[in-house]
Length: 266
Image (cartoon, rainbow, N blue to C red; front, side, top):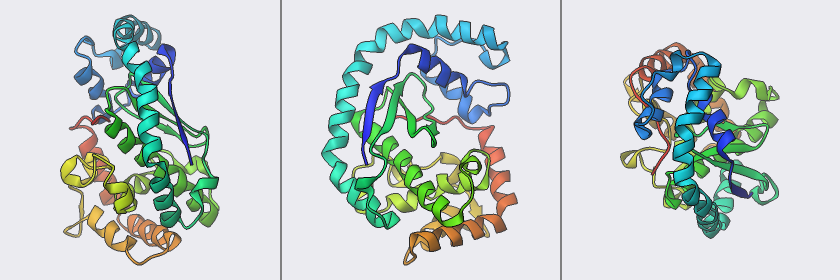
């Protein structure tokens, strides 16, 4: 398993940002742009698509020109920091997913962008990484995303469903975002992730932290299910649990997404 960190360029950054500035995008995702860039003083979600892109290009170009040297420097810094821990990451992932991680996903691509949100693209084997992250923060985000690739590889092999089902707002996607914490609990991963444990900011979306089902935090339930189970047994048990409580889970997410902004930095 390996990750290449690269400057994805200005055009890519704009396209990445636009993914989270549609009229349908919840404030949880869209508001972080204005938080990190006070220069953006319009409600760009209300603009027409062409106007929205033109406004972003004009406004973000000045920012891009200013931070480009930092982005270029971080290509090397992120790479060096990841390589420092690569062997122990591969060991942990091999144990967690019961396979040889060294033979898989050796061409993962981390695109360094201006976007505070860090989407991942499973089929293309790439994800976005916000340039304001320190080396430690970039590694924490990278661990989160890499876990998704291995999770869905094993999931697909076990359940024989389609990669088309692994995107938001599917239940498979929701579960995959929650289980990151339990996989990350391995000390070989948790000790190098600045987002772990929960008290340090959490390695999962913040709206999962207070989610309770039948009076118990859902993340604690998933942690319990993870213990002493094979990876596929964990997947089955966790998915069955989420299906039984799907309505409650989705209600909590809907309420949270319209009240809190998310970002990916540390």
